[in-house]
Amino acid sequence: MLRSHIDHLVVTAPSLAAGVEYVREALGVAPQAGGEHTLMGTHNCLLKLGEALFLEVLCVNPAAPAPNRPRWFQLDEAESVLQPRLATWVVRTTDIKAALAASPVVSGYVTPMSRGELSWLITIPRNGGLPLQGVAPTIIQWQCPHPAVQMTDSGCSLLRLEGFHPRARKVQSMLEAIGFQGEFSVSALPAGDQAHLVAYIQTPAGMRRLPSAKERS
Image (tube, rainbow, N blue to C red):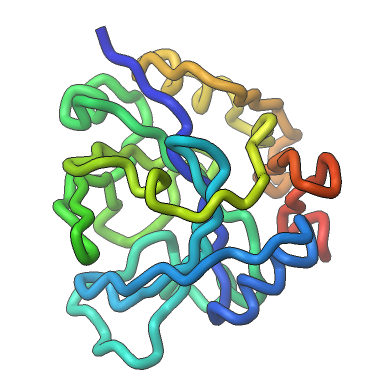
């Protein structure tokens, strides 16, 4: 039987400095240095949210050659990275091919990725887009120990994640199909309203809300 869980949140940004500052302002804690993704021409910073859960700040690496394909998480679209934002989330499974086959939402094709000693399989749309504007999750299968194990304890933990989308039932049907278990809820929006996510995170200073770009505008 398929099972999946929240693996990490993805904050996209015009630069690592801008993304880190966005998280620091919202949570009072700064992410730690991550590394580079050669295949995608991107790099990241990371914030531990649990034993197998983290937040990733992700952006184009200006020092890396441009890839011969669209970058992941909509990073090639200028409008998408005008400002840092909680862009999407990623769910973890032990059978990514079965999860992809079961999902009614097309989340991409299975792509092998690596960074240093880390290796994983992840779904990436051919156009580098975000399934259902990022409210539907990307799917990942780690082929190594979970990276959060090696991250510095930030004193932060994810309490819950909320999604808002005009096609909320479509998102929910995907989660049911891949056996999702976790603190996520999705609410319907009127047609034409902007889909977005909101994360509630316990920090050393109390519960904080990681706002979507919509809330910041």
